[in-house]
Length: 128
Image (cartoon, rainbow, N blue to C red; front, side, top):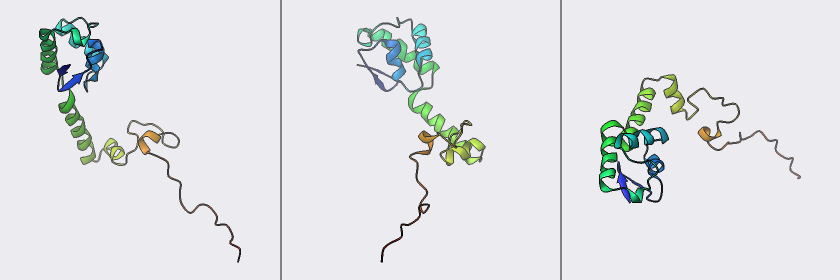
């Protein structure tokens, strides 16, 4: 079990796939990291030597912002947008789509479960 950037990456997967389990590392960055660390991308994590693991850790620490630091950075950026009342900040506050998507239909992921408007249905006449 290799631990890189505070994340335990799966040992049965290839290194280039396993690195994508780290927040902030996608497929492109994973291949770039492995090229810089001179590690074969198709090697399984369990077959990595300690020296190779260490080289991968050093490249990530030196060149990339990942995990907690990156999440903090993103959160601070959103907080700044909210504080200055930018349009995107207002969309974040209202929990609506931020990047110009339509909201008349769709947008259910962002808006949450639909709520029926109360009081629109006529009451049935009661027998007396």
